[in-house]
Amino acid sequence: MFTLLKSLRSRHVYLSEPASLVAALLVAEVFYKFHSFLLETAAFLATWWVIGAIAHRLAVWAVPGLSQGETADRRGS
Image 1 (cartoon, rainbow, N blue to C red):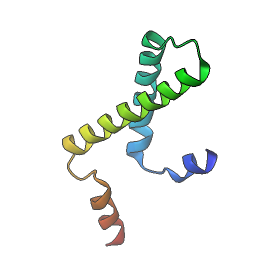
Image 2 (image 1 turned 120 degrees about the vertical axis):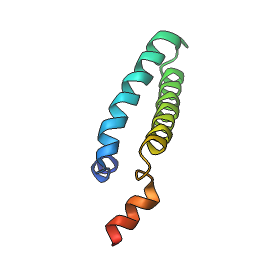
Image 3 (image 1 turned 60 degrees about the vertical axis):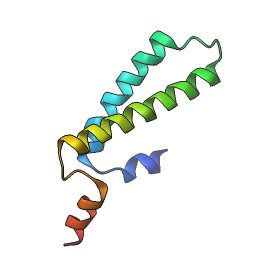
Image 4 (image 1 turned 180 degrees about the horizontal axis):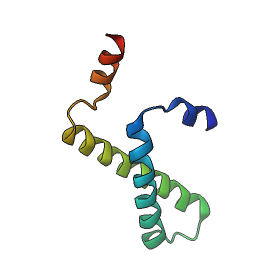
């Protein structure tokens, strides 16, 4: 996990992931009552992934130079 987090260097990641983390925590706290730590953790991680994907899509739509391919092209030039 440490290596994964160290490899994320995009400013977009640092700004969007904490917001999606908090949103997923709120959803999990309010709605997920499975009485099983494993099920609630899996549901929380899935929720975080979905909210993060939605936030990323919205950010790419709102700021057109944020997509992965265009960022890589700029670094190579």
